[in-house]
Length: 295
Image 1 (cartoon, helix red, strand yellow):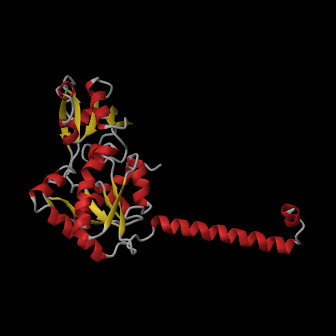
Image 2 (cartoon, helix red, strand yellow):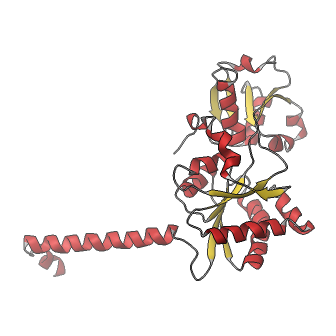
Image 3 (cartoon, helix red, strand yellow):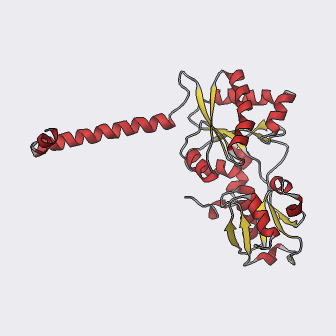
């Protein structure tokens, strides 16, 4: 009976009813959207922390949960660690401003300035990030320019050291064009090169060192890229600066103990220090967006 009455409404009245329903739905969607990306500095003092998925989820949780537990004790805030199934998923989420705080690769920070504009708080001061380009030990390629027109494997388009920095150097310094092939993981990159399925592959020293001896011994480093500041831990600009400062101070305090140093070293951050956007300005001059891919 209700449906019959709705169809027998006068045109103007039916239009008003429909408009009212549309407004109600839009209002509900707006509330839902605001609750998803809202400022989490409410009475519960709970903040969402995102971490770029360099490792599988259980390992990331094992690394970060003890650190966040210490931060909760020192600040009185609650930190909700939220994982992302893949790096592209993480990229979508931080660009949309989902995380209140996030640990990301340096280019992610630069990229976020186009939208969510995260602000770096701390980084490792003991090292800089760079990519390594490897070839098979038996390869006749001895100079980077010899890769012109050849297949080079990378783990993912937006991997900073293992892809973006290498591709920028190949094009800007060596003036060559290669055929990129993305194989999802660093392990796959090295295996492809070891099996002569690609002329070369991009990675970083840390993942190269972790390879099985048989794979590692079959590779040699042909080139190392320019260096940049390493991964920052950053805050979304909606977070009160005083809260971000309190978190920054707490992280520095954690690093003052031997137990805290060991926890941070697993990230890995060996010598913690403050970070600023100035640390990452060199990335802006490299034009890495040329090689970036967005879903």
